[in-house]
Amino acid sequence: MAKTKPARRPPKSSAAAAARDAAPAPVIILVEPQLGENIGMTARAMLNNALTELRLVKPVHGWPNEKAVNPSSGAEVVLDGVKVFDTTAEAVADLSHVYATTARNRDMTKRVMTPRAAVAEMRNVIAADGRPGVLFGREAWGLNNDDVALADCLLSVPLNPNFQSLNLAQAVLLVGYEWYQSGNETPGIDDRMPGNTRPADKQELVGMFEHLEEELDACGFLRPPEKRPTMVQNIRNMFQRANMTEQEVRTFRGIISGLVRKHERKSEN
Amino acid sequence: MAKTKPARRPPKSSAAAAARDAAPAPVIILVEPQLGENIGMTARAMLNNALTELRLVKPVHGWPNEKAVNPSSGAEVVLDGVKVFDTTAEAVADLSHVYATTARNRDMTKRVMTPRAAVAEMRNVIAADGRPGVLFGREAWGLNNDDVALADCLLSVPLNPNFQSLNLAQAVLLVGYEWYQSGNETPGIDDRMPGNTRPADKQELVGMFEHLEEELDACGFLRPPEKRPTMVQNIRNMFQRANMTEQEVRTFRGIISGLVRKHERKSEN
Image (tube, rainbow over all chains, first blue to last red; front, top):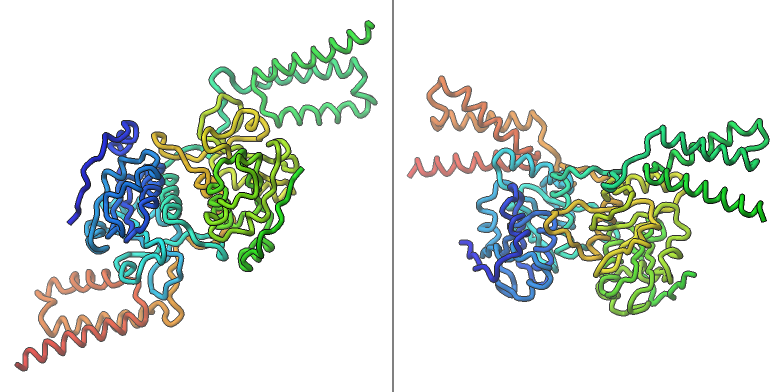
């Protein structure tokens, strides 16, 4: 039976809103976690990635644990919803697909998945009305083989083979991160300009080029004449790469004029 | 000028080997980090992902900092190689491409990239003999705009918009994780069997099906006759999904025989 902890304080409203609005997502299950700090950091890593359902199997120092509060950095909405179970079997009883995280290579006939492949499968599971969950083991030695036998497959993060050990909350963070990325549509590259400007159009850019080349002709920079076409092309290519805004084109035309005036003043002296 | 800290102790040999063999990789730069613990956890997160070059700009409590050692969990090879700089400009002086991590939306005309897109670009940069580096800001308020003006683009991790705050080492972990994944060829799904077995072939599976169906005919389970074909198909489909090994086929044939014998013994009583 799950024992639900009563709310300690009203959760932060924005985080609570996020939890309320959350689409179905995998459940995170910590098996016999030892340190309250790790439970708190796990809650933080979960909420960073819009995961809110945390279950604990026999936490070593019981639950609730005040040491979890500060490390959660305000993820009370996760801590307040924690459910505690006596066995791993009870903690996964209502789930349809269970992933067991492990760094060790186990001598078992069980599919091993990366987090990236696993979260794609979890989205399919949820679309088919299943409920996925991810098991994380004890800080000191991970999951035991009885826990793993309750899982559909192993989840293993590809890391430096000479230095694989992750802190518990970091392991949760990486799985949660992949979950969030798999449902997020942030463009990989965003070249948007701030609201008060826009990319320069080619007419503005060519106006700037001609302004610059006129002054460079006047000061004798674009010589000898047979090299002028190549020099002009190279200069234009350099400025094309800069992806200038309309504002930056005006600024640069001001720079040209400023440098010319300084030169003219010098000439007058 | 970079001040290189002398090695404190011989680094662990496997980690040292990893560092020696490391292919070119991005440099991690922490600007005015406050807590030694965060520097240690950063070193751990870096080595997890085969990153070894860490630079510090004016660490608040100086360097070396003994408080970094335990949280690094053995990543001495990173701590021992730390270089300290007086300014961000000096710390990035030898780099060709600099990415500034930020959660805040800055009113700047600068490309914003996700870590996943950025690491792909970093691999291109390295292939073209460039040197990429990633700037991480102060724990309390991140990078200031002068730091950001030294960068080619912003790096922003897509996270729950209502709960975005990451610990410094966790931010390094996510960027490092994407770096490592982008160069790693672990299959997303690995169905390999342990060394002592192999997937059952169809002949073995059909042999098992026929064994089962013979016993089910004998006990009268596959009735009425007009439903037998559909029942057999459903049972065969269920076992096909299980991707059984040759060993598991033999085990299951033993189970059939065992159940039949129990039934026969019962009948004798």
